[in-house]
Length: 229
Image (cartoon, rainbow, N blue to C red; front, side):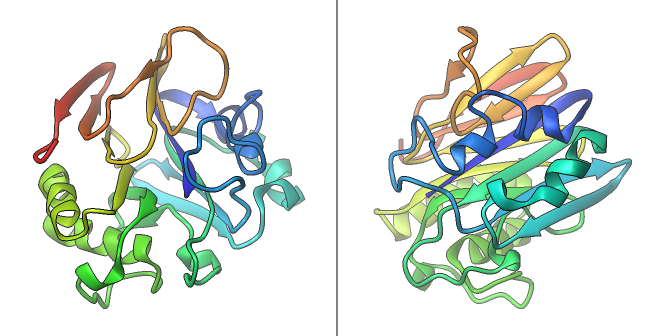
């Protein structure tokens, strides 16, 4: 239902990750190549990055391709950790900036690519919106990021139709899950990209198997099967 991307490595411009690649998130907002559900991602977008220890965000309910202000500023924004997403809203979910990833607890930036029945998610005063992704993010933050794999497996047990691809960063670490949709990893000389789909045709992109946890620390990338896989 969405496409997302994260970066961990040397400081790079947000534009170089989101706008410039030939099949980057900008193009994925209107022409994704590997998206299994939905044809476009025009219901909002968000970019989060770390400025030192501070998590900064720029989110919108409008399509990414129509934001000239972001396109003008993105080349000047540099960070060593970025989490970005373009959104295709599920039926009945609100279309508002606060419903767009990345969500944050002040320490982590988190995106959800997928769908989950809100009935299996607890209400939370910390959820940034009423959509499924915001409620799921609040649950993950409450249980702790080190329990991400167990949380995803538990939600999947409660909702067997859920799609639970999570992507998160805290400035020095990336965590991701595959559960029902695509994810790929690119190891570059200056860092690691984790994305819903490759943003170019580099043959060194590695597809992550379904129902796996991905952990990135520095240049170390570890894949672990999730419970219930």
